[in-house]
Amino acid sequence: MRILLDTHIFLWLVDDSPRLTPQARALIANSEKVLVSSATIWEVSIKIRMGKLRADPDGLIEEMRKNGFEELPVYARHAREVAKLPLYHSDPIDRLLVAQAKVELLRLVTNDAHLAPYSDLVVVV
Image (cartoon, rainbow, N blue to C red; front, side, top):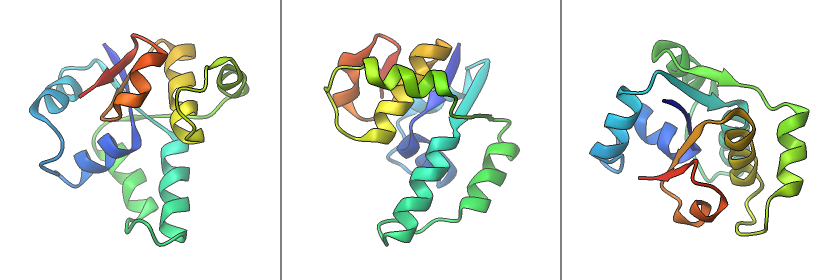
């Protein structure tokens, strides 16, 4: 299975947070490919600047490499897919991650149950 990590899931994994469920850890460990969107680093950078998050974007990029995760760039086809999504959720980064999962046929691993109505590709853990 190929999976895309939602921002919270990626941050919890990097921090070895107890909020990351055993189910999520097993899913990540047993996936053939784990991807992290460039939009995740963008979201983290925005939240750092706003004072809502303390993190190091360079360190997160290094963690991606160390864990063998692949970066998923944001392509025009992903942005186009966002326009087709119903307005179940208003967060633009979350909507982009859903669009990326749909276009690339990835499972989006998230803790946000509000994303579940978008697709059976969304896995809420």
